[in-house]
Length: 289
Image (tube, rainbow, N blue to C red):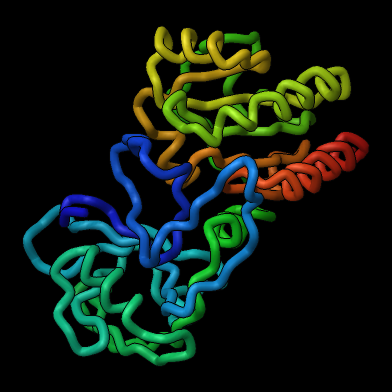
């Protein structure tokens, strides 16, 4: 991780060992060892003994020091401490903060329940805040805290790869939407295809839209979708803007969005039990008005 890379002071799972990561314009970094997901070993909720702040930071565009807060996770220690997007963290636990990796390192070194002081700059003034660190949740839990019960972000700069679905959530109001972020190199993603093909075949008549989103360009995405036997619509997010907005730093990541455009659940990685729960949710949502 370099100082030019955005860092998430929260746990993020990876697709699987030995595969390259996706390449959005700004990425996250782990505050703990990444969880491993595999089709034969369902993802189970885990709690890290390391501290967790729940803030996304990046290198500021100027040379005035510190790191820029890009966002905070809802209900996280950062939000409860009063940290907001646009703040600049100058010191953490008495140490100067030079890059995002400093936040990750200093937070991970403290145990959950520890109170950690921060010096931030907000506007032209400095403030001293104190945050009580939580235990680092797993990737799915972080995504649920960040997105569930909130309006789904816009889909930006998507190009159709296959299928006739308009990749615009505003045009999909009144329909249940399942968004899957995937990549051809992601081994675990391949095990999602039969399940999502089944949902597409069974629920399309009830107004459910299954849409796969990949950062591959249209031509290689078309080839990969054919090779993998994907039958549901696919769109290319070659700019990475939508993937970044949805914080799909680990693949596969699946969002279920209700007819009002509100996120109702998120799954990171593969879990047959969690997929069964998502399927029941999708069925229930089709009956909502």
